[in-house]
Image 1 (tube, one colour):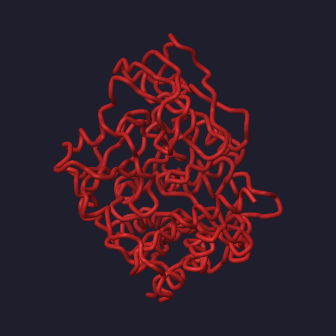
Image 2: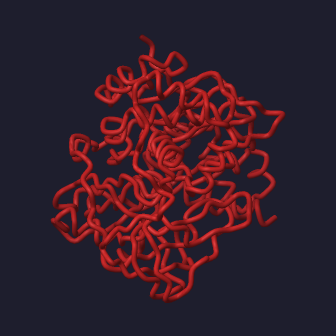
Image 3: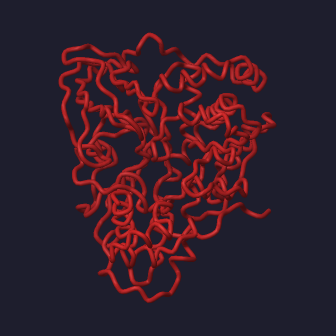
Length: 446
């Protein structure tokens, strides 16, 4: 069988053996919980609680009237002890609600136990009888955002423009970033919730087809989801070639459907909605249980970590507590990253809180993170072959160094998704992503 893939890409060592066979275990929440009001793309929330308020687990504590936004909820029960600016793992600071955990985990009354009979017949009836608007409303109220890293509010995706109808829902189970295995474990441990979530997403947008796309380095997840989805004729499992950045939205659309999202366009322009597998699981829990997004799978790994692990983590606990739960460090780390090593965000402190988009936190020793100094382009063209967006990173890098805004526009610098394939493959170790980041700022400010 021919594996689905896209043109370009690279093949880094995936280093997933550290945690791929490690089951997800609960991370015990800490005494102080720090909930940022900025956990998604779009308008940040404003607190709807005050210092001194008693809050329940799953209670809304922040919201916004903006369409592109998503409410945030308390991940524990306890007392609001402060509202202040606090370092954010995405950079800079964010207004945060600080909660003193009472360790009772008293649930907000609207949240109910999972009461859905999971026979295929009953699941089909449940999905058939629920209204699309109810799904969208519950997704919005639960504060669900993309959990693959982008953290785009899902209710926005579930209301596409009327002139761009959605016919295909792709659940992204590629997890192509090295080290990360949180999605892999979700597919193994919660496959039925993922399928139910996919059916609800399909119902919400009126699609006819669901493809759960998984790279072929996860044969156990492929087998499990094939078995669990076998009674649902609209669900198929798309097996992808293991390659980075296979999980990027435009690349997975091209691999699965053959369609190409136009420059500057959204997936809805080609009739596709892409969502992460763990996001789909959260949709199922939001619709069935009214459970908001207050916890998620997080991989804690890297060569500096004593016991690489997968945890079920509440939002608002610190990165420091995750590494402590993983046994601490074997050696003093030289670099801490939120997300994967290719596109993740380096951290300057461990005292930042877990947010909805954190799929992993990695700690590396010096050999894994520091290379030789930047060299001079030798025009080998390897970066052009590797670029999944079919750009010319070598040229863009040079235009950036010369601040040539017109050439940067002409060569579509804004289409670059900063995946790092060009820098990875470059024999001269040129810092092309950094140059292109500078270039994008030049173009946007011109």
